[in-house]
Length: 385
Image (cartoon, rainbow, N blue to C red; front, side):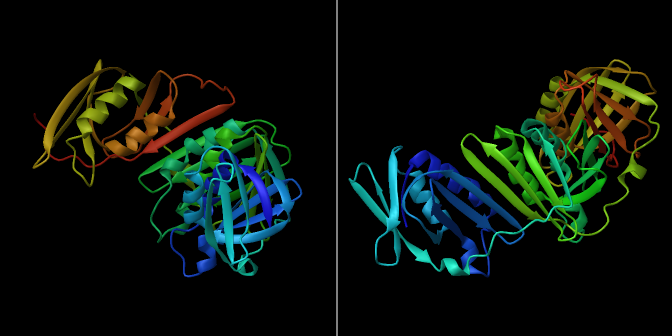
């Protein structure tokens, strides 16, 4: 194997494939990436057996071949090279050689047994779809933050993707909050479908979709319980393969309040900044901040023993009786970061019932909608500064 490639292309491809390489594994081969040089391209693959990322980049191939190398070490070595042509090949001693700096520099890394590297998954699609990369990135960003990290409930460790007709919804919940991002459009044959995509896959896909220069092609195989995403980023082809999470996702629509009669409208950035400041003094576990909602304002306050106290008032419009609620500030900040409108609307009921947070008015893309649900925390005695 011998090929020449731009350092920037090689480094980018390695960092992309690394998204699927586990930090620890009982199988040493999974700590490697597979290099495959053929024709005028180099393909680099990383996998943890559940999620596989494969990227193809332009290269000048003198001798086709393949090699498995320790992923993080090789990526780190390449990252530090000058931004110029790099020649990669076999050094005849069981290592992969790297020449750089117009022949002034040379290094080598050990090869692993590439025959042990897992084969790329095959996805025999029973449904296919296509979605623009930026739209997919927005759907992911507006939902994935609410994924649960509780491994005792694995169905909540991913994003529930539900398609029906000309609408697709991305839903995530950890039992304390829920995020649903929706988009209407023609997705090219997804039909009626519901799958749970693991959080690791969703996070890697979100980063890639934001850079995509082509629509993202989606292939779902419910029989084999796999999904594949294919996209282009400039001259590079990227495919992400993933297992799907098994099990029924909770009926999330049952927990969304049908009628929350009290409405508060507040400036999104003003609330976000005030909440961030006040939450500095909140409890390190609950991150609770007290919200005292009145007709023309909402007062945020915290008084935590051994941590500190803070209070700030934000202008608001409110049409109900005065209300005091407690919220996990981190959960609410996550919501406010994903909404783009100037103002947000809180639909409230009682201090112990779920609240809804939505954008005021339409989003920049009128085909999209966001709904966020957050459960309140039980309040202690009133906070004072």
